[in-house]
Image 1 (cartoon, one colour):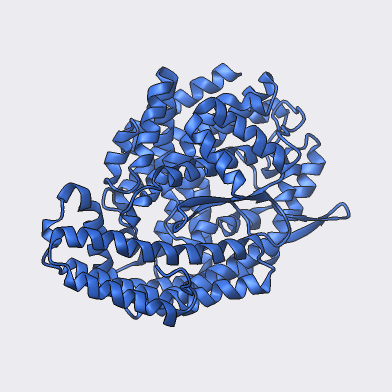
Image 2 (image 1 turned 90 degrees about the vertical axis):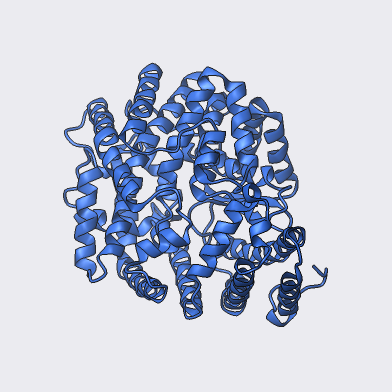
Length: 559
């Protein structure tokens, strides 16, 4: 890679693809081909980092016109060209005479993924994918722009989350209604964006020869190890094993609060009406206390987090104009992780910090991997890295709280795990419905969502706010930005609970297995990665039942 390469300018980049194509055709042995795989990864990593840096700048400042322009210029001017040339290289690779001579164990996953790239690529889909990315940026911009005026002060919707933990019920209700009404004001915009995305996605699937976008996406995402039917088994297991447990928690909450019914604004307050957990006031405090957790947990991981601080790879505070949510993204040429989140001083921020740090540790663990695609594990396992870190890090929450409050925070987290299973099942089942009912309209979509809310919801009275419930899915960015990427969280949570269960028997071994599995990156099939972490790759009622019991028993102990 030349040091002065302009990675945002296609005429500057095209000759590098020309060189790679020439070298690939000239490979005369499997050793030559292996060397080419490594060399090609240098270009792909550099281009990926250029895209990532622009995305980070855009999400950190959605109201910055220059950042938005730079991101869209890459999406429109570079990505179509890159995809086309990467396909050409993949096609030559798949047809190469030396491909069969590569070491099978080392290159099986790489080989499989390249074959799928060739199988699915359609030139006519490239402009459709570009348009989809632009619509996703519009969703981010719209979501990040939403604010309300609460008692005389402008607040982002993320900042309003603090008030849902207040012991004064009138305050909670006022805050919840204000946010809900603000979202509803934009519902037609959200619906319009999604309908445009839906049209593009149907065309992409049809162009690739698939009867629906779901089947196309399962193939495109490389879901070689499970099927749509397995996802439906996950939904059924959640309905059977988790929904009753959540209903019990909600009934207990209602009794403790002394209410006839639980309303949407009663779900985050402490059920004993204690003051909200406030783990920190300033972002620097959160970082310092998180560092101490990692110091307790593992010296290597602690060193990685300290290095991120030194290199200023954290943007953690919430502010107007910042995109919602949180993510970890890897700067692939530098082989360094970056963490983005919106912290406002809630316990949820601590969980998010631990979660994204788990992703960062995954990126650091694979930094020495020379086969570029292997630096990234399948998302189902990436989330094991992050969700396990939430549970492992929670063992040291006394860095944020007094002992009694630390137990309270642990309880909040474990209750959240059970609740999020029901939300994951709802979101995933909704996407299955959307993309297997191609002729649906908005009314049908809303009805399907409400059916799923009734199937997986438990114990909350939404009367009078049916419209808010009907449009609740607008807040789930995955549905808009990365369709079908959500079941991964559920599959991974099952893995993380197993890592946590293992740590309660032998913490040292569980940590060794955890780090060893992270270091494998994406070089092994998904079930093998789970086994390396000491887990079973399974997500039916058989695996759910003992893990739900483990969580319930721990909750009883914390009571």
